[in-house]
Image (cartoon, rainbow, N blue to C red):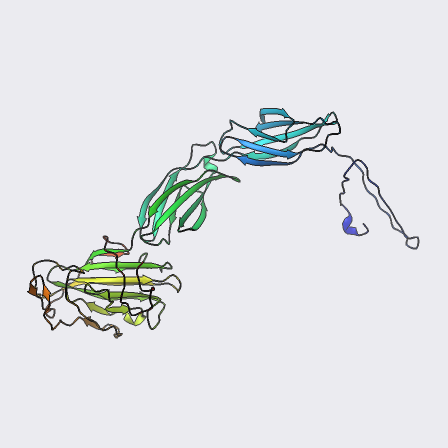
Length: 419
């Protein structure tokens, strides 16, 4: 050592002997040094460590020096609130304390008998693990979210607990820490299975996890006219990969009128990154596909009292949302006295998919070729009057509907298929 930064440095020998060297060049004056020499107990246990724990026990280990007399004892004491509650003498280098309280801090002291003298103790604060939370339950669900709640365990320090919440699907998981006994889990994929685990945490210890499972609310269903229909979580944007199907139904003797109020997509010419689509009949072909802002204000009228709406949002490109109004218009249809459901009609209508100007109304033309429907022929007559009501709104959900796949979609394969 010859630099000023060595001032304050402490060097400990590996035995009871140390040799010091000092050298000074005779041609240089004013050089010197001053050090302090002291001794310390070589038998102090080191590396006092918690090797395992649960809610009622703690296992400790430590390192002891070699005893020249080949007889070595460790004195181990456990304290709670400064009161000694357990005391042991052992020749081992590991000890387990049992019968402890969950989620509690204790102080442990370990000294050794070395060369006939008890060493200075080595001390450390240790904690038992908390008990797991109770009654974990999904108390509320909606499209894209699930609200989970649980009960804190009846432990002495439960008010100081934190909780690690993890939700997972298909091997992918997300975790967060909360200080309350509830968590709103968002950005779920509709209709998928999820597992939720909640773990109590006290300082640096953790409980065993409590687990529950649930199925995210599906997106889509059967919807009556006279309401708004929007993307899940509207007006918030969606980042998840979502597919939804709604079957819209107007009263008998009416047709469905859809007006686009808001449509925000990552615009592209083929709509393969996300779209809102409409069809009227039992075929799997999409009749009208929309993904551009120019579609806002567009009105589409079905040729019957039913309409099927498809919504696809891809995970990989930007964010999407939509909002449409659903109303009914009275018309005259010569048909049996029963409601036509999607998939029940033998009529096949081919609607052009070209873009319309904003505000333009799209009306499906009548099929000039007679089609057989329940032993009668149906003809569509132009609407004679319109009635519209906006009594409620619907975002994402609805009554369950059949799973649908776009088998004949003109856009890129797989991206247009509902999974």
